[in-house]
View 1 (spheres, rainbow over the protein chains, first blue to last red):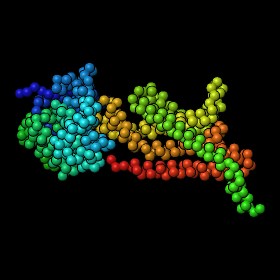
View 2 (cartoon, each protein chain N blue to C red; view 1 turned 90 degrees about the vertical axis):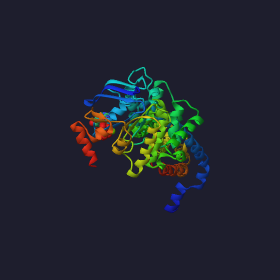
View 3 (cartoon, rainbow over the protein chains, first blue to last red; view 1 turned 45 degrees about the vertical axis):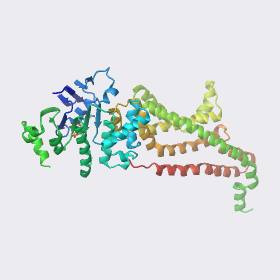
View 4 (cartoon, helix red, strand yellow; view 1 turned 30 degrees about the horizontal axis):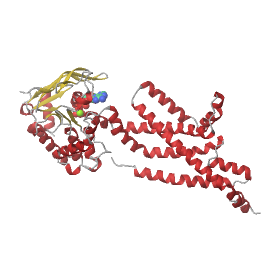
Length: 246
Length: 226
Ligand SMILES: Nc1ncnc2c1ncn2[C@@H]1O[C@H](COP(=O)(O)OP(=O)(O)OP(=O)(O)O)[C@@H](O)[C@H]1O
Ligand SMILES: [Mg+2]
């Protein structure tokens, strides 16, 4: 068993008086795909956002690829390049082309020349099968294409782990497949991934482990067959039953 | 002489028009110069204040909001008068041109700051998060991701506000600046005939009608699909 790339221990998060994460422990091994499910408001997004410190955890420790993410001396901008993130709402820069979106951080953060950054950006777009859309602006792309550009933007930085926060939830059903396909290919390339999503079919097919969260805690975790087929906790059972009826 | 003849003689007197046209044309160029100086200084200062405000330094933000509200609340003419008639008492005297420029630049700065600030805060939080998650720092995210979107959003209101304030250049006539209105009024008092005012109105139309039309065009051009 390989070492953990992501290791969160005892993570708590308060928003004012609201206790949203109540001591979460999560370790993700290299090349592992961890799927996070749970009811709305259970803290899935917050947990993901703590991992790259978009949210500041109130307590606990987080290491990613050996870097202590909460240490004040850590260069957070440098650390974040090892952690790709894909958002539900894509968040592409509307004033830049697909290529510009992908190349921006390569140029500004990794200090590549324009030519080198654009070459690498093109490769990343090829990996999500959008090389032919490099010159398009987000407004000229479908939601599914935008999300794949967002994936390209993250993987161009060659991160050690990718975080997905409901990457297909904002998409029309017919566009979901392309995004899942891109994620599947990414998985096959050996990327470590943490995915918050309701795509149970994808979870069954691709996840190594499913984590069920409720009320700011991890209630149960295990291989997809176990969590979906034979959940041990009452709350997990209720949740799985609920989504499978949909 | 009928009333109609008297009217024509008053407002469209060819002899008076010919005599004062050169003065009005000089005033026309002076108005353009004054307006250009106001736009440059006002927009630049307003943008600078909005950028400073984005840093989120509380004391600084209070100061910025105070200054902005002050210059949005005071009538521009009062500011011009204060600078022109008031500053000499403090041992500092400004020319009429400088007083009008400074006053209107401050007013434009105040409105511009508010407009840019509204644009900056209207950029979705997800834009910040996406950029920061790729390792971009605050400054890069602000200048390369957020500000370009904010600028684009605010171009229509900024254009309209700028047009409105540059029309305020007519106020400079009060402090003896021979811009269009000043030149026209001087013409009236020398000739005892209001025809120079007619010329002045025409000069304002020549100057501002294209600008207003441009503003309309900008408004449709930047009504964009995200
Ligand atoms: N910035 C914030 N300020 C205050 N409360 C917040 C903030 N972000 C999240 N919360 C609250 O924290 C709780 C957990 O939110 P979170 O977004 O992590 O849930 P989630 O599991 O991702 O839910 P969903 O499935 O709806 O996305 C919710 O009650 C939410 O209202
Ligand atoms: Mg969420």
